[in-house]
Image (cartoon, rainbow, N blue to C red; front, side, top):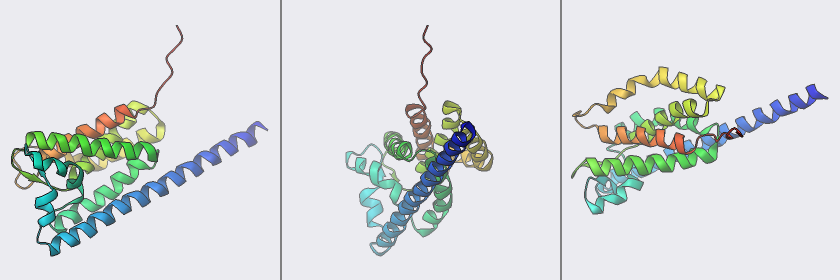
Length: 204
């Protein structure tokens, strides 16, 4: 009876993980599809969407870009460079808990966008790289805060495979918003802390 019960529990857990992974993959692919469609429209509009809906630092009119900038890119080459890491890191960030992934995405976009707006005076910023750095930070911090074996394994793998992106935090790189990268990363760590697994306090 005990062995059968344990098997059922493992089976349910595996089923839930697979279901969550599939849902996360669909959502991230959907996000990418929106980005590609938007970039196609913007191409025919001559970059109007970038100018109208990008983040413009310290400009009140540029605050709208906090929400829309992650879905805009400076050309198809920019979007292509962001697509694969967004797909991989977004999937790994979302496969464990879809609800937390969605909230993490919101926090990363808001914190990353607001930080960029505050520290990039009169500069247009667009692109999903802040979201990529946010998912990177979220995955690493989630492993540390939640201390689940699978999360730790994923965090170690992501840290090993993507440690090189941290070079994007260095300032004064032409055409690169290090502010967006930095505050996206911070947003991911904050999201992991806010959404961490709650542990019961010992009853003293």
